[in-house]
Amino acid sequence: MDTKFSEDIIPLSDLKVNPGKVVRHAEATRRPILLTSRGRGVAVVQGLEEYERNEEERAFVKAIAQGLMDIKEGNTVTLEDAKRRFGVK
Image (cartoon, rainbow, N blue to C red; front, side):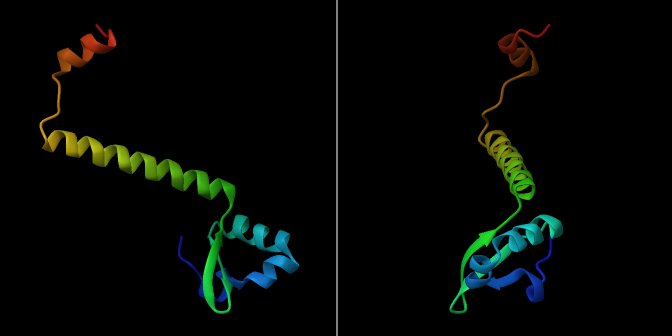
C-alpha cells in the first residue's frame, strides 16, 4: 500500500465539497487518503475493509510479539500441561 502523493493527499475543503468522491477513491485504491488543512496533515480517510484488515494484522503481530516475549521471559508451559488445561486428550 504505497501512497501516491499526487493522488492521496487532498485538502480538507475537497472532502467538504465532495465527500463521496473521496471515500470512493479510498475504497477503490485501497490506500489511505491524507486530508490537509493549510498545508498540514489533519486526518486520514481509509476504506472500512482496509481498516479492518489492518486492525486484524496489527492484533496478530501484537499476539506474536507477546508470545515471543513470554518465551524469552520463560512464561511457558509444557504441551501436556496445555492439553490438560484445555481438556484436550
